[in-house]
Length: 210
Image (cartoon, rainbow, N blue to C red; front, top):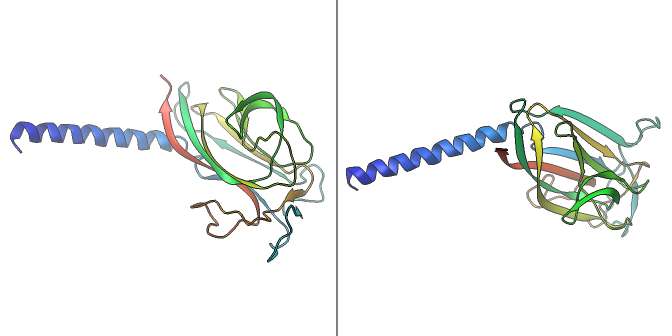
């Protein structure tokens, strides 16, 4: 390799390295949500041979109606105030179906805005303070005693320093158990099935909105 070619190679390598560092730094602004898990574990152990469509009691259920079978986690998004970021999430888990209305369906399972349209099935919700919006992750056309895996990506906008509210609501203290013993590859507790339902959010990309 001559000197000119070597110089060009080193320059290109430096650019690639800089781009890689920049991408890694941007991804860090979404650390508050990266790897977050909504979990609805079952109270009782998973039976050896579960009954298809089996209903189970949520381990989150309490005797207090105000906190019965629901949870909320509040986090702060990183980045600079006044800047917006496009955050790509990979959404994976084992869930029951839930209906929503008055919002926008994106793909099969993702839902933007709107409100829950059923009073008994599990809700998985992310609310962003700026730009103000909320999202649901387990949309379906109808509810029922079904369980299924989800694995999709979606991109949302979040402003630097925004408040992220992650909310799960089982609504009635019961859930459809993981009677089929479904497993999401490469997501804990794989290769074992999760005894209940869960969604894990993983950040795959972050870009500044120009």
